[in-house]
Length: 235
Image (cartoon, rainbow, N blue to C red; front, side, top):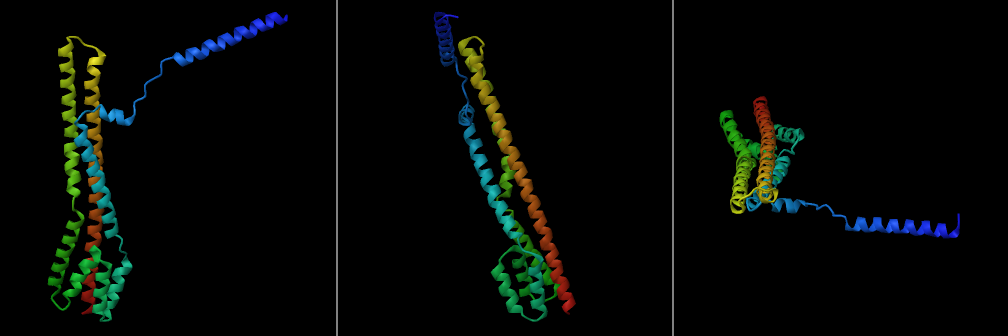
């Protein structure tokens, strides 16, 4: 093989590589669609759906941590109160209940304040206090139930709006093409999906909080019964 032939092969290879590089540079790049672009294609109906999603997350997390904090008392707390009552340290028991300040301590404080009265009156006062504490914990949880119902409806409104947009564009152009209907299809599908997602999240959040409240309500009822039993034993 001569030097001339080697140089020719090198030149040919270099030219091939150069053409491949030019082809790669001029090749069309696939358009990427970000999440923000996808949401924007949903149209104006995404604004109320977005507001509902923010409300959903705020209410859920605010109530979740409030309920979890309210349920943080343990059985040792009641045992301390019971021992103080047996020993006649009523003021100390009241002070602990005031310092603890959770649904169980507030309910027990009502019962302690009515010591000396008939058990029926004590039981009634504690039941009323327990219902009041539960109603405080249920604050704004109904909002999640409402959002679970109306968010999919907003998605359905977006679906209708997208279909109207498709037929309007077709009527203007007097033909059917993917470019004419793509905008309406985006709005139709995105709003439907967004409304359903927000509705499902709100639905699950509402029932999860309801389960936590029901569990706490059962614990309060158990604590009230234990307190009344302790008063019966002390007689």
